[in-house]
Length: 583
Image (tube, rainbow, N blue to C red):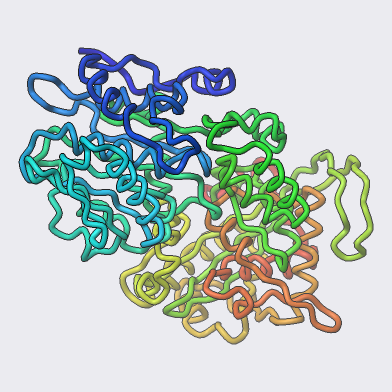
């Protein structure tokens, strides 16, 4: 039996409101049986108390039929056993969770089977349990078949003793579970939990011995950049949908804007809100969303981004706070060199300055390599507000020598315990190769020093700038690698970094400073908080709270040095080809 869960033409389908599930139910009779149960469940909290079948739109029927229609009628095996659903807020996820899991409980044949709805918080757990309770209480047949234990958020099938439990997640809650069917609600919230991966592994472990089972991950977009298990599942779901990964047992259903619409900013037009809201005009009230849209726009860019994430499923690339560094407004647009490597920088630049910052056990050690390209380029500078004068600079063409930025960071694994709230994000950066988790103290400075030595051996290194109070182990490591001591300088911090902070803003706004779109740096830039003193602007670690900014502070140190306009080495082609570190 052949089928594919990929939907390669999803961008056309979603705009034209066509189904995003590219195949009919594998076993139509099984799908019909489940739909008969699901469609008769009563929506108590909707005016007139209609059934699910009376109010749900075709997209939901297709999805429910796909889930239950994937069970082989003879063997009982679930041929598609993982489902990923991402819809915007207010598209009925809680009611969907209730209906699907109640249907699974009613159709389940295994005695004493366990069914589980796993929610990130007690409040969200209540949101899923109440519709189940109300659906049962509204139907006399279901009342006779199912026992409701409200205090425990537990439903028991009176005939085969199977149970459906709604729980708020923690490791103790799911440990030892042998659930046949699992619904993970609001997966994006699990992405913020340090041990969520192990928790979900425990919760879904029962499927290994329950071939009739399935797991469903349901979510909206996060109001923060995706992280942890949410990022992992979302990335995987997109690859399956796009045909990059062939996984016939995993079915993604993702309501998000095509990239072309995002690039054209069409997602900001509420006329296109239907794209990510399949229940647009039904459970999603158009007048209310229009009101929230206007309010969010008036409150500022960060609030509007959060609105777009929740109600239009637009992924947030970085956080923008009211007290943000002004350079953050230009950061994403200047990530024009995705995948930029240190070797690329050595190949293209005539001079390099290095910045270093951090290194405590609960901190990151940040390295920034900033180079000035040999070649001049014609760039079109978009209209922007000058960060120094607050005057509007009109759009114009300019001839510039671009600055290339490459960064890396190191951390000791103890930071994952000391800073559990950011642990999932740090693990993501580690997987991406931008953050190195070292096993022993000293490995971080040793690896950093080798990279600085590589810059020195290229013949391009001007200076290495460090926080004067944090030289210690870094200085020893650089000395061991024989980086010339005269090239290592202390860069004054605090208000004395004002010039570097402002220069960075201007170079980003003018299109001069470009970078490799590293998620680690986007996070650090989003974390940066600005404090205004009498005569200067200060970005400090204290003001930025638990969010780390060490690689950004290292970048300011490098900007301080490159702003002094060091003389370029100016290697010609013969020099480049003769130097194996550059060629």
